[in-house]
Length: 380
Image (cartoon, rainbow, N blue to C red):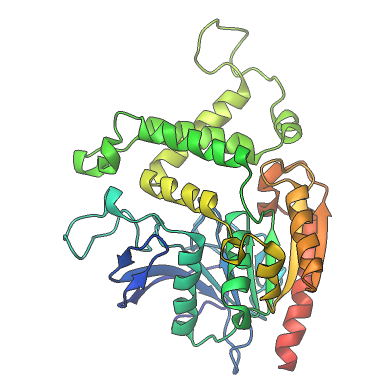
């Protein structure tokens, strides 16, 4: 097992699972790989393990850099590392790329062992429950019987909540950040518009675009541009760009004229080159399908009564994609279920993306909570 005690240099590793995985949709993956990164060291009784679950476009590269020359750290480097809120001097931290991803775990870009060709559009639609099941096998691989904490923002927070329900004895703390117990109709609508942009791209080819040596760039670009707007707050966008012109005066055309247009097109172009369209379709469907109370007659209190974890819930004032009201509703249901929960609502101008930022009250709250988790590990 390769460990990385200095978060400056990250070491990815692909872990094979040569066992079939039955999925929620009735299909079975004959085998699968999970791409992971680990930081810190497991203590003697393996009680200090923390799982980081990623959101829609995240991956296993949570923290650190791949080399001293690497300009870009992991996506949650502000949160995870030596001396940071999730302190890798105290915790063994595991980040992974979920099933269906496009950064090394088995997904649409992988070879289907039954055909010898890439899965492409034939890769099954996976759910949050499927991810949690695969992550439980990952815990078994490391010999971890119980996570000290499972942490995630947005879609990652949904995984932390599902873990606490599906494997109650294996989670001591669940940190559910900028998340929700299910998507609103508006959020499902946003996801469908993004999917339609991809599916109707002439280069989509029913999801088998790589067989045609192309990718649906235009669809991915539009999907990301629209999604990116929903992750930001109007206040934040206004503060950053206002109505600043990219060019000198109105051009009376449809090319870039405002700075905000330039920014969104850059983000869309960058995303279209690094992310797989079939993965994007599946990640958004996992969001849509998330319904942790479904097996309990849609009674969320009944679902939460099965949990044994303590909960930390955080929301952000300008997040309109997963508004604070959604987190407050989860807190109320946890209280009704008799569970231990701490809640913070952070003032931020970053919108939904605030969970990735370093707003001081937010960082301070997570640090304080994880300090207490670390003390528990020391006393075990």
